[in-house]
Length: 355
Image 1: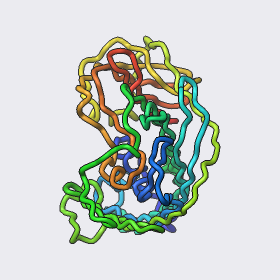
Image 2: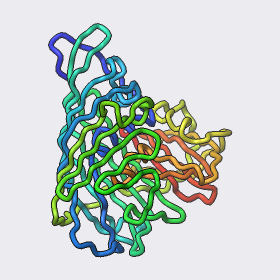
Image 3: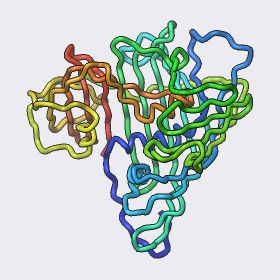
């Protein structure tokens, strides 16, 4: 962060909003992107997003806090310039199908930062998001992986997220969502935060409100103003799948609470503390301690970070539908891991936060 006079400390808080913010800062900026599957119908012409530019005004307290900007007034501006690359990988361990996805890379510059002492600053960050999915020939997704790398000095965030679906869910190309009124080439949200999209053949423009801007409407100044540029032809680049998630035996050492995962108690219906159970975390960790709680879930409630935006833009998004099971928080020498398994011992959701 550059400020000629200020040595303001920017404290990072691990909340669910942080995961949303990383997506918000750029992935929602991505526009109308659809990951084609092998089961997709042939179209006359298929266009693919190649570049994303624009501005997001962080007009809500949540959007500022989510990026660690707790000590600054809301209203900072983030300018975005991102490139989109389409990728594929050979099947991972315990995968039956090849993996396909995207990489989003580029720069996000946050300006107009003003703290309580009227000191001003800016943040220059690099963003790297990788998404891969195991999708079968019928268009069902079995597993998903997200890697978020927000490189911004003291504000840097690193997250790895792994999802398994039992049973598999429809891929993005097969989903229908009634949250939007579609009047081609324009569509807008029926309710909730306003999002308006004008989709042209070579580009698309996106305008709208942040998730918690409750008074924002189609008549309000937009918090989000983005343009995406498209290309007609797309080739997938081969990548090597780098991270395998491993099933670990339980660890009896409970230790101290793991505060970096406190946000999950507001996301999951956490109940009684239980004996440590098996859990899923990245392979090769040196496990030091574990705590486990009972989770109650019907599978009906869905947790979708920024799902409204991501659905609107046909971007890949993770959907968690917690079942009854066990939530474990694990500390290792390399970072903290949270793992949710169902009552059959099957993986549902895991998140890893490197230290």
